[in-house]
Length: 217
Image (cartoon, one colour):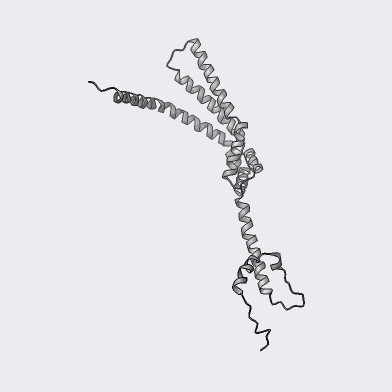
């Protein structure tokens, strides 16, 4: 029998790992024989090329979808959703709530002119502190960091598409109204709840005094 047809490859076990490592190498995808050689390795070359294309099609899109959102896209999302305007609206409502709470706290007290002056000064200091700490320039970097750590680029792109739609625009325009109504309702509920909270606190303080009193001899 012709030796060319009786040849058996040796050390196939040792060559297998190297073949796997070279699977996607440039040399593996380019034939080594000349155009006149018979295409004896064509099936292997086609299989290697098919595997390379499959890996490119499955791995790369997943990596792109899972990457964190870019700072530019998050800034665009904040701009589209009018987040700064919403924060400013919330700050105004908080200011109103603080003033109403302080006024309610002193409603049962007859304040002198000096006491009223002190109360107003305290109110202004509290309002100034809150505005300084929660101003947009201080909050924006925090929002950018949170959004980039929380959402992928694909998710931010999806939100941008939604908020540009008519339904998304309706959410943006009506959300300040939702926030204002929600805070008003919460304020009303808290006004009814505060006396009960005070009562429970007073009862707890009395019980604490009773159990803390020295035993009678």
